[in-house]
Image 1 (cartoon, helix red, strand yellow):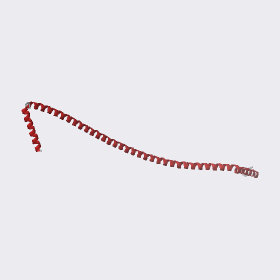
Image 2: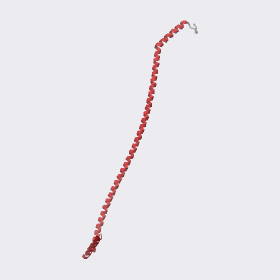
Image 3: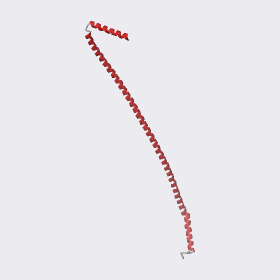
Image 4: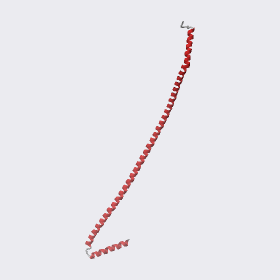
Length: 168
């Protein structure tokens, strides 16, 4: 038996065994291997598709997040603007109310001062009148000690009153 040229029996048995092994592989091995490769390919494709969908969802979520952030910024700006306007309005109202209160207090104070001034002037006039009457009484008692002097004084007063009425 030479290594370069095999005999016919060896080729026959090798061919027969190769055929049987090929048949067994064809019948039982290749379908299982093919099924496993196809399942693996489907799983890989499904995984790729799921990854693509997940990436797409992530993009949508990122876009939604950006939109929500932008909306939140706009709402924040609107709230800040409204708060500023409210603060300014409250300050203006408070200033206006303070001015009104100050005006009322000032007006009341002026009214009270005027009333007190009038009251004081009345009291002073009353005192001056009483003092004048008292002084006049003392002077008249001294000057009009007699009846003749009293009569002359009365005549003088009547003449002055008549002159004053004729001039008017």
